[in-house]
Image (cartoon, rainbow, N blue to C red; front, side, top):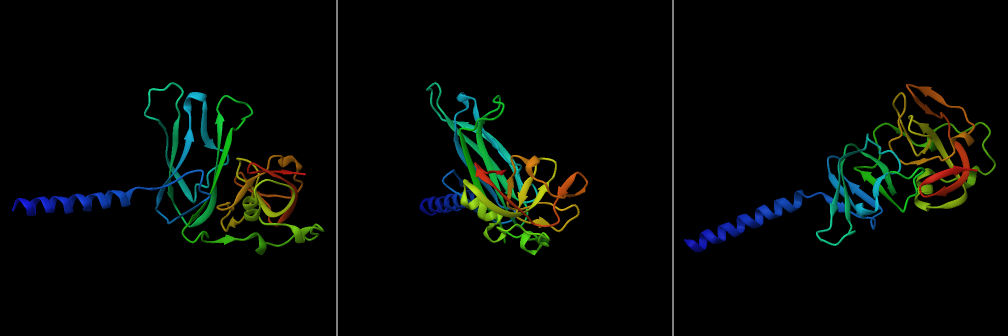
Length: 240
């Protein structure tokens, strides 16, 4: 009887352990570049950090809150008595809806003005199908009446992000600004006013962009694809 009871306890322990491990969110580090999750999934981004230096990880670009929700941000110090030892910063996210977006983080000190990042981290996140309901791809939007002569060499916003830093790169995109800054947007959602739920790249010098915008409720966007030439550096585009 004692043997049977002990065996039953082992089975129960293994079962509980399996349930606990399966409920843990997936963890990603700066060695990962793409995150694939389903709607409702929770996941973590864990980045090496050292709070004693004054540096911490923070968002370099706004989070696409229609696709992802941040549910936690904490610092975990190494278990040591050594002065100046580091740790890690843990971001907890929940996937809200089908779509694709980028999480862009930089390692900065809050008192530096302007920020002087010591490092950058970028993650492409694909939720479900990766395509939000009711989206329009820039290729399906009316092209400008007088396209630039180098339109054929233009790349998409997704290709721009995948290519990393580059100079004299030609990009085709719709432009979008929800009050947090002008961005090149990979696709606009069919809402009014529209939203930019997917690929986006901030434009460092919006004053260099001379195009017509539609506006509604504090949101500005271009009704047609525009072609811009400039430099991509650390996730930000500077127009020539």
